[in-house]
Image 1 (spheres, rainbow, N blue to C red):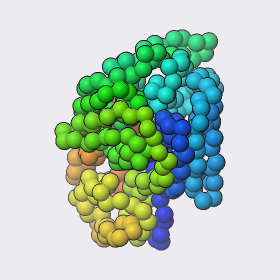
Image 2 (image 1 turned 45 degrees about the vertical axis):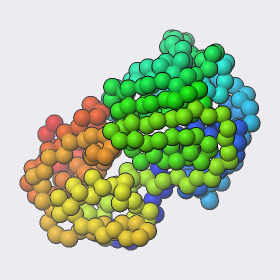
Image 3 (image 1 turned 135 degrees about the vertical axis):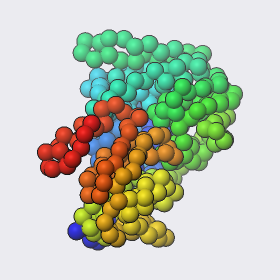
Image 4 (image 1 turned 180 degrees about the vertical axis):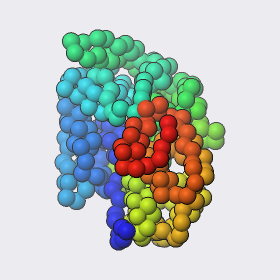
Length: 345
C-alpha cells in the first residue's frame, strides 16, 4: 500500500502554452509552480531562439521571461517532432510581426493522428496566409500576416484544445473582435485566458463554448501561478487506491477533477476534499461493471483513461472503456495483459 503525502507539480499542458503566450508582449512575465520537466526545457529553448530572455530557477520552480524584440521568426528544424508547441508559435507571433514565420512540423505522443487542420483554418480566418512545405527531412509551416490580423468569427468543427489556444493567441493582437464558437474550455484554456487578461487582453468566456476576444496593443507585466496538473493528481489517486493505500495529494483541485471524482466514487474509491488538496484512500472492494466514454472537458478526459484502466483491473466485474479522442490510446493494454490483466480490445 502507498501511504503519505505528495505535492503535485504545475500542469505541463498549461505552463508550456503560457511560455508561448508571453511572446505576445514585450513586457516582463514571471511564473511560479513551474515543473522541472523536459517539455518545459524544450519550450524554453524554443522561445529563446526567438529572442526571449529567460531565467529559470529549477529548484524554486520559477521562470522569468521578457521578449523586448523578436530576434528571429524562424524555428529551426531541430525542433521538428519534438513536441506540439511549435504550431502554437504561429498564433503568438502572427500578431507581433508582419515578417514570414516558419515553424517545423508537430510531434508528441504516439496516440493516434493529431492533425493541425483546425489550427490552420482558424488562423486563416483571422487573415493569416499559411502553407505547408516539404523540406529536406521534415516539413514546415510558412505563415505571415503582412496586412495584420483582423477579428473574425471562428467556428471549430471540434473543440480542439490546441486550435482554441492558437486562435486565442492570434486574436489578442488582431484588430476588432473575434468570436470562437465550439471552443475547448479545459482548465488549461481558462488558465491561459486569465494570464492574457492580466497581460492586457479583454476576453469573455460565454455560454455554449463561446469565447470572445477584443484585440489590443497595450500590455502589462504579469505574475502568474501555474495551475496544478490534474492528470498527475489522477495518477497518484489511482496508485493510492489500487494498492489499498491512503495518499493526500497536496494541490489537487476538486473543480478540475469533478468528472474523475464522480467515476471514482462510482467504483467505490474513497476521497476527502480538503482545503489544500484531496485525500484518496481504499475503503473496501472496488465495484466494476461500469462504462466510461472519454470526452473533452468537462467530460472524462482521454488522459485519465489509462490510469483508470489500471484501477479497473483491481475491481470486481467487467467494465468497458470507450476511447473517443485518440484512436491509438490503448497501447498500454498489451503490457497490462502480460502482467496478468484480463483485457480485450
